Length: 218
Image (tube, rainbow, N blue to C red; front, side):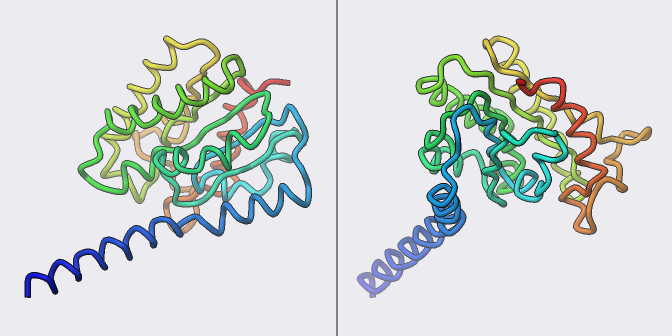
């Protein structure tokens, strides 16, 4: 009986690991296929992160910059960016990197603290600096989504910790969009979100455009 339980446990762990491994496998393969067909040029502005970038189909048009390469893959966490950093970051020669990620880290579990989210970003950032020591990097603050409003305290604290870290670093800008997405009562503006109350519509992205236009390199 004990052997059966042990075998069952091993199988469950294996299945879980394979499921996690495959979670973004196709996204990464699609990026590789696209890069093979249309090799990215040098000095791109690399956007990497989660679904807020994935859904931003018109990012080049909205920011009036054809050099932007969008490598957002929906549902990803900072752990996933670390796992696939060789494919979605180090595969390119960017002149600037823009990151939006961390929101899914908070949403993944109540046990993921603000300091852990900030720590995950710091780990990724320091690794990026080893390969790209001087290029400008921008981190967009976690956004206040209506569907995740109950997580606002952890998100605010994560933003605070990452902002503090950014202020002490060279060529790292913290792009604060949190307050800009709140109404006069301090709640997320419902009109800037899609029906799922999580992802933004064009009005939400207009806020991001105004913020990013101040930090993107020319």
